[in-house]
Structure formats: structure tokens, C-alpha cells
Image (cartoon, rainbow, N blue to C red; front, side):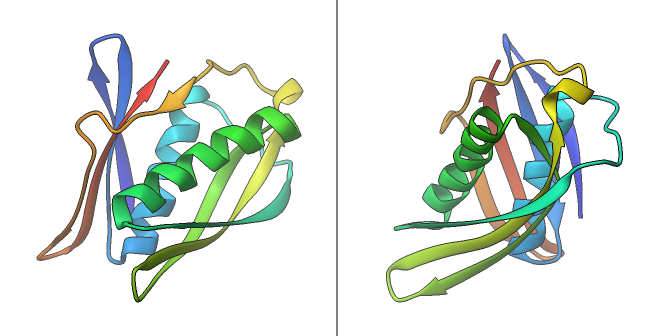
Length: 136
């Protein structure tokens, strides 16, 4: 799994790939962390989170939004993200974990929010591809 940061007018975008949809969610979340901080120390404790939504794009949005919320509430930068995505009936769910690096241990740029602007999440011949724009 991998990600690249992309310039996007006054915002920042993350383009990511992964073998599975869970891999691409984790890579996109790692891209979100990279958009906030270039050098991440190795400290921090893992925490878990769960998100459900009615579509795969909605659950990606809600997952990334939850990471921003966790940053604000816990005072940590979520890094080393791992996600498992499941689809049952009309519900999509994400079970995830991240290592929370204390914000006071880093210099970070604020990402305000995830957006639906130009969002893409699709299966490819090689796995999965995502493109997400963040408001900075």
C-alpha cells in the first residue's frame, strides 16, 4: 500500500493504492498524517476505532473524519494506520487502529476536514485506488 500527496489549490489531496480496500483506507489515513506532519517520532500508543456508513465512499469519509476527531479529542496524530473494511447488506464498516503520537511531540500543520470534493474510491486491476481532498 502507498500514498502520494497531491497539490490541490488551497487544499491538499491524498492519492493512495492498496491490494485490498482496507489497505487503501490505511494508506489514505497515513497520507492524512503525512499532510499534517513530515517527521513522525516512534512514540505513541495504539488505539482502536469503528465506523459504519451506507456506502463505501461514506465510510471512507467517516473514517478519515473520525481520525481528525480523535486528533482533536485525544491530542494525538494518528499514524501507522491499519483498517479492515467489511460490507454486509447495505452497511459498510471499518474496524481500525492507529498509533497516536502526542501533538506536543511534533510540529504539525492543521488539516481542518475531509471533503467529498473529487473523492474517488474504486477497484482496479491491481487492487484499490482512492483520491481524497482535505481542507487545510
